[in-house]
Length: 348
Image (cartoon, rainbow, N blue to C red; front, side, top):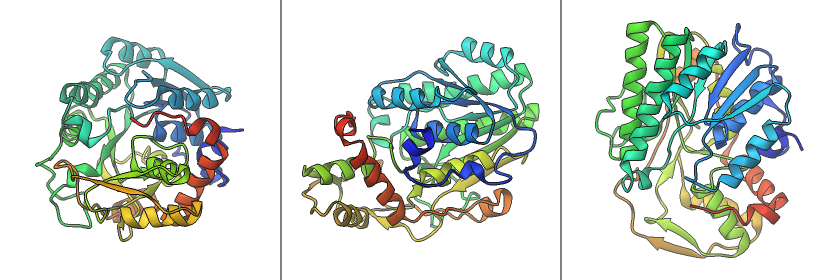
């Protein structure tokens, strides 16, 4: 089975689209390539004929077995090279960039997750802030000019929706968001001082087949399908701008265009959907009612997110194509097809 089939169910590869890859892009470094978004983005680049070097430290933030499966699928492609490398290792990152002529870097390596960031803040600052500085410095020293940096909608906490990129995001309510804010600021500094071309893409609740097992879509599908109780923090009415993985990967690749320095939302762009709505969709697909256990809402969680994607449409000619119903159906299909091993993935 190809990477495309494994990650994107039965959907046609978006890499077949004319103009997906910006001109002059033939060799790309993808950091965090074993991650959910990293693997899918690398797969689409490879399908479009781009050479990809991927790095990842295969951390235990969630089940490394899933990450190894993703890398294993990518390694079947002759234009993919993998290095077991941590972005916190500044020398290793610099050496890799010096030894290769990368046309662009898509920097997805990060420690994700709002709640755990409040328990272990140091690792978030080390990976998300210092790791990004290491990438920027390596670019400066090796002459690489284009960076796509993955940021987060978590920065918009407390702001009026739909969230626009011009909103002041100076009051993050989690260490995760704070670490991403620090990285964004450094990206601007390197654009201003060293003329790097930087696209900062803020993701909104990415989900899909073979997704992160520490996020609610994967967990809810597994728990409901297998007849186990599901845990909801709060009353379940909190809403998210769910964005399907293929849409996110397309937008990330499109952001390799030369734009100067821009912050761009990549989100669903419609009305946000509640966790209860998502649960209802899963229940219909697996023909089983959820057994719900409620837990106290976490102070670092946002109650709702909604992206204004006008800028993405204008600058990237991008808009999402996959409804929550269609994306969850593809995710359920993937889980059923891979149940023999997906049901054993560690969730945390």
